[in-house]
Image (cartoon, rainbow, N blue to C red):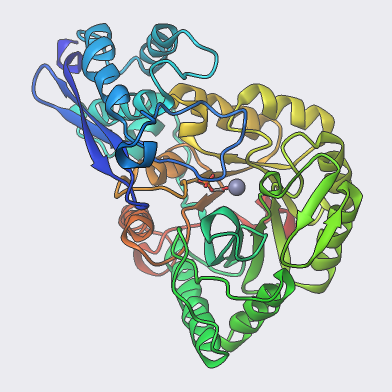
Length: 436
Ligand code: PGA
Ligand code: ZN
């Protein structure tokens, strides 16, 4: 059908939430349907990720994207002209082959993911469907859709907050909430309580990259104490209504065998860091830990998963980099039990989908995730609902690039109905380790 064929592809330079340039791609189909998407960008980047193309040099601190934009407006636009956007896999294969490198560094993962997502959006537009509906239709999915359970940052740290504390994300999950909307309501309450507690202790300094409170703590445990107190102060039972989730992002402060917790003045080996985290899990209401050990520390990941994997989600981010192959291997090794899913780590929508499928097949939890450098683009919320991800992680409940996503979720929730009136049904508690 020619109405789903690409007429033109145009890239422009726009801004991300860190004040850095990024790539927006707009695809127009022959009968005028359009789709656009903006590439996000990480700060704590896994070495196995698809590589974004940056100009280097002096302009924009080296973060310019002129080459990536040129790649879209030149080579990519010519290659995809006339292609059918409803054939996502064939289109993505073409992009991968055109780039020709294993890590997508020639044309840039930023150029490729924005093109790939823009094509999906144009396809959805041409069928008069929301992206999440289109993705379900494309998959032949007929089951009842649910909303992902939000995982929301309260304190930022690590590479997102000048390394003020070592741990990158201190988040909460409303494990007792009945609906998507209620999970957001509860989390906003915890955020307000945490803000008040920080103010009262003279610790409030602003917000970090993803909108979480700037962590002016003396050590990592103070953040855990404060977060537990904030849950209580907001009127929730820690571990029953609201629980804690950590993104340790351990590759940022260590590599295999040697981890330097600057805040705590400790240098630990793999078992030492694992032991510290297990101790925290026993003393605080922690239900999920992401990248507890560095991306190359497979043995450590296996030991940690063996120790706590039955009751806690052990999530691979830098460790899995949204790669179906790595997820299958991790499942064989028992090195995690959940996968973070970031489209720009994979570089195309089809590869992201393959990672989701591999994770689901392995019985892994799936958490669709934004990056620390984001925009108003909300595509990932649609991926989470359309593909049936269990969870969604987009940073805190402040800053426009974050609320753009949570709010898009509220619109989708309304369409789905659910508890209350359009608050959005959540996956059954039994699908999470803490609910079993
Ligand atoms: P990043 O952080 O986007 O800076 O990689 C997000 C994460 O580590 O989950
Ligand atoms: Zn992470």
